[in-house]
Image (spheres, rainbow, N blue to C red):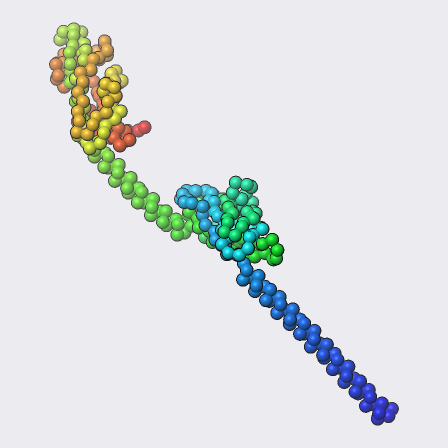
Length: 312
C-alpha cells in the first residue's frame, strides 16, 4: 500500500471520529436541554401549587368522636380533584387503630375520600373518625390534589384534634377548673339551703284527752332566710300520711315566710297527742321539708336537722 493510500485512510478515520464526537455533543446538548426544560416545568408546577389550609369546622367538644374539617383552596387554580387519605400512625401511637375519613354528608368511611372539586377561595369538607380514646396522637393527613390539567400535587397537613397532647392538657385543666367551680357553686347553694327552715305545731283536735283524740289541723310555718327563691315546697308528715304544699304551690320569696293552718283529713294522724294541740310543737310523727333552690332539690328532715341535697 502506498503512502498516499495510508494517508487517505487516516484522514477518513479522523473525519469519522470527529463526526461521531459532534453527534455525541449534540445528543448531550439535547439531553441537557430536555432536563433543563423538565426541571423548569417541575419548578413551575411546584410554584403553581395551590396553598391549602385544613382546620376544624367550628368548636369541637373534648369528648367528640368525630370531627369535621374544612380544606380551603387559598391560592392557585380551581381544583378538579382533592383526595384526603386517612392518617397512618406508628406502633407507639396505637398503630393497630384505624382512623378512617369520609366526605362529610356524602359518603362512607374509608382509607381515602374525594372531597373535590374545590374552586379558588372555596373549601371542601371531610369527617375524621377519632373514636373514644382518652388521648390521641398528633395526626397528619396526606392530601393529593390537581387542577383540570397537569400533574397532581401532594402535601401532608397536620390536624388539630380535641384530644391531642396539647389539647388534652388544656382539656384536663379546663375540667379541673369546672370541677372546682361546681364544688364551689354547690357549696354556695347548700349554704343558702340551710337557711330554709320549717316549724310544725298542733292545731285543733277532737275526741278528748286519750286514745280517741284526733288532730284535725296543723300549724305549718316555712321560713326562707336565704337569698334565693324557694320553689316546689312540700312538707311530708309520717310515711306520707299527710302532704302539704303552700296554697297554689306558691314559692317562698327570699327573706319571706309562709304560714298556713292546714286541715287534716279525717283519721290522717291517729296517734297524735292531745298535748301537741293548740300550737304546741308537733313531734308524734316524723316530718321533712322538700324544696328547690337555684334548680337544685333539697330535703330537711326534722326541724333542727341540716339541709341535704336530695336525689332527683
